Length: 362
Image 1 (cartoon, rainbow, N blue to C red):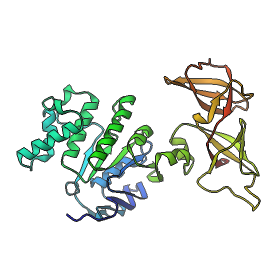
Image 2 (cartoon, one colour):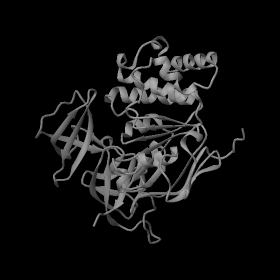
Image 3 (tube, rainbow, N blue to C red):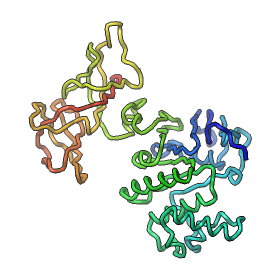
């Protein structure tokens, strides 16, 4: 079978609408072979609809979708889902309750000779760590085990692309992250190209090579996790990815930034662009600065004090919400043996390596 050298999946100016309402609008991205991409965004941003367009369940209003260099969707033409060789893993796993684990995994292999079907089923159960569960039934499995069975079934037929729609959302937080890491390792071992849809950034970080942050049917930034966190393209991405608070600041003539807590040093990221200048350096101007919890350090020796207004115990650390003397609030991650009471004033200082700066909001 001919395989094109380009990306496995490519979307060019894709749009989708229900009646007059555009759910997806002029959206483009590409996923390389064996790459794992993620569409990350809040409920209602269009990410599941986009996944359904890629699978062939929805028609396009504009643009085109290519698989292996072949157009599979464009206005007026949609290649049927069964011809796309795409595997899917859903939020509810969609396992057949009356079939054993082995029969669930082998379900899509009915056209293969029995010996081959059996071999592939056992190979996939070993890959997901369930070799001893072949004769059990879904109701006897934990949520994490059911998810592994769904994954084994989806991969058994060797799809050229795997789509995962909120696959871990019904699991508890700890299991979610661990399973996401295991799924990534499995996909890489199987040389599988995959696209994940989620609203959970920790899942996205644990699983994906590249992440597209979506809002209102558009991708605001397509990047790796590090850049999304440290070099966000706009306020929405900065706010949606990671924790943080915006505080007022001012750009100085030397190109630094001053906020209530003091002068910020480090790599300056100005809303995805360069600071405006006049030949003599950056122009002093009011800005909003995003401070992450790791940018604000608890220091008893610091002359700057902040009052504890909320706290969340996280085991090794406590996430404090602190109010500065101006009334502005910041977050700070502090080792949990520093257990301060609500209302207590504690010393804080800045320790920011990446300074994320935006023009002052009107």
